[in-house]
Every structure is written in structure tokens, then in C-alpha cells.
Length: 168
Image (cartoon, rainbow, N blue to C red; front, side):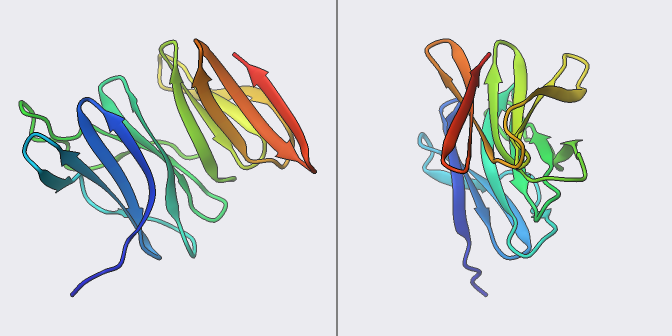
């Protein structure tokens, strides 16, 4: 049987291309290796909540592939060590952060820390101990986008056609 999968985002990291896909109930990440021409499934399929869940962002951080999700108001952050020439790859995704409310729309690695933006206008930062805390409340009720540019991290949100942004 063939299943149609939509592509939600991609990432070029560690000389591989990572492609996040989704169906109505499941999330997958594939790794394309241009040297071998092969496409591999990274870890198992993630069974997600909601009516149309998707992986909103992929980031390479601390030697792992990280994914944040939109799951109808209950997004999560997952991580996995994907396969390499010297490592078979992890057999499961680890749930690194589950706030229980709000979807997670963006993620960025910046100066040794991992930042996550949610659907409520918050920016969370992951400490070196693996704990996520609110770093900034950018704009209440807005999707927060995170972008690294010119050695700065920008967080942006749009509420009622007013753009709010911060730099870190």
C-alpha cells in the first residue's frame, strides 16, 4: 500500500539532507545521503496527537537531530541521533520537552543553547542541564519565528499586523 506524505520542512546538516513528512496521524523524518544516493527512515514513526500534526522545524544541535511539532495545541520537542557511517542510529525518538499547551513553531541553535518559539508568543531556552524555561514573552497569542542571522538570534511575532521582534 502507498501512503501519501506531505513534506513539512527540511534541514541540511552533517552533509546529509533531512526531510520531515507527515500524514494525518504520523510524523516521519528521512535522511538522504548524497554520497550513497540512499534515503533512510530516521528512527521510528512518531505517532502524534491532533487532526493534522506536523514537524514545524528541524535543527542539528549537540550531535543530534531535533524536531519540534505542531500537534493541535500540544507541541513537543523530540531528539534522536541519526545513522552515520560509524553509528547505526538511535532506535527511538526522545521527548525532550512537552509543555502540554501551545504548539511549537520554530527552533534555533544559537551560541550553545537551543531556543524554541511557540504559538503563544513565548521563546523558551534549553539550559545545559536540559531544562526548558521561558526566555522571553515576545507577543501574546502570536506564532514566534526564530532566525539566526549575522551572529544574532532574532525572534519575531506578528499580532494584528504589528511585527514585534527581539535579538538575543
